[in-house]
Image (cartoon, rainbow, N blue to C red; front, side):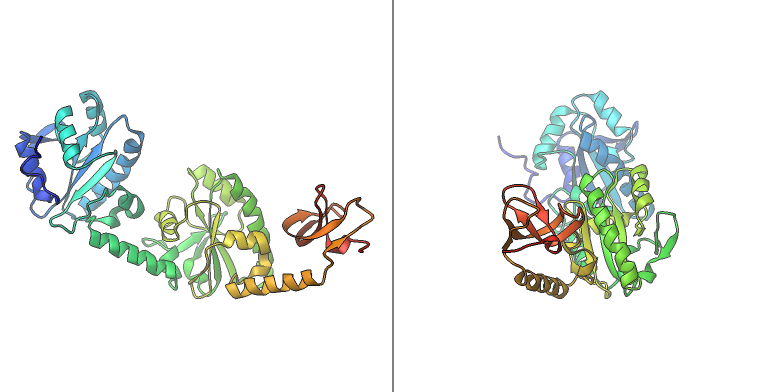
Length: 387
């Protein structure tokens, strides 16, 4: 079957009206009303392929409603046309009633042809139709989820601009721009006290990405808290942690903040999502370390704190190299194995990130004398005899 004569590789905003007209569509729906096909002159027209039975669609729609209202309120000339993937008109009506934009009247066969024409293979799909070939061809949902209304008008040029701005923020130097957002120039503590972001300028900062629902975060929070308290005394308060929450609700966020001694981005502040995107946070817990100049020092702060704790401050590669050199020197001064009367087997020198000495029951790090046969560890200082 030949493609319709109006189909082409690049689809422009004017074409949707041509497509609908050739498909016999005489009007669109606005709520319960029938309205003429709108003029596309000067408008950014976007197509939303969605369905009431689709959970991701129902999760995305409120976000899109918020974006649409914000753009319209600010004078942006945008129009959205909903094309349903629902199986019946009841589902279509249920889904459409929460949408403030237009919709193509329900017609399963027409909607299938439109989805084929626009190469829609999943929902939700949000397809901006630009005024020229500069429009982005891919689905813009990821762009909206990452940038919200800032993504408008969803062109390739705008996408590149936003990525460039993220690169500048990631490279650092402007803490107030990185941690503030839309007039909010403060951070909060667990008690609700506000601290100006400007007070962090000149400090080493750890951006801690975590959540109450994440068990590994509980363990890392304890490690970070130990290092934080030690550094507040040792460095004359030249170190600060800022919690960036990925909690699912305010109750989880408040539980986290209740036990944390540091500062945080307020819950549901857009900066939380922005920071996760800017630093490409794929899993939690994560700790990104910024130097006194605001530039990124290390993106593996979790590993550094877990391994070296407060002694890794100021968390530079040079400081890590110094610690490792010191540890190697300590290891060179220890025997490779010992036979201690407290244990029946030979104990071999081993590098351990963390352990509990089986003699004094105190925590240990780095060098230990360990048994290859059974689970037994000794601090070097707890060894009584060597070969």
